[in-house]
Length: 112
Image 1 (cartoon, rainbow, N blue to C red):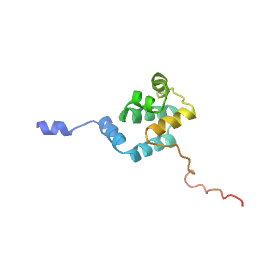
Image 2 (cartoon, rainbow, N blue to C red):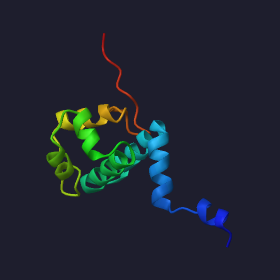
Image 3 (tube, rainbow, N blue to C red):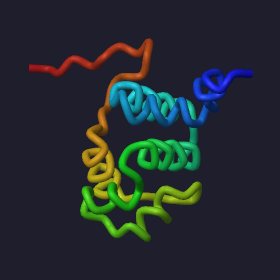
Image 4 (cartoon, rainbow, N blue to C red):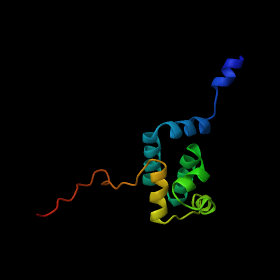
C-alpha cells in the first residue's frame, strides 16, 4: 500500500467527528435522531461525542459557563443535566433545543 493510501484511510469515529465538527446541521440531525430513537444514556454519549468533536469538553464548559468537572460527569452515560445546563451546552455548540410534532399526528389548531 502506498504512503498516500495510508493517509486517506481513516476510521469511522474520525470521519464522524470531522462531520460533526464541520457541519452543524449534521450535528443537529445526529442529536435529533438519537433523541428520537435512543434513551437518555445514548443521548448523553451523543452529546459528549458532539462536544468532543468540536472544541472539546473543557472549552465547551467555559463557553457555556458550566463547571468542566460537572460537565464531564453530566455527559457520562449516567449523566442527567438540568434543562438550563442542556440549553447552555447546546447554545455553546451552536445548536438549540426544538420541539416538533411526532410524525403522522395532526397538529392542534388553537381556538380563537
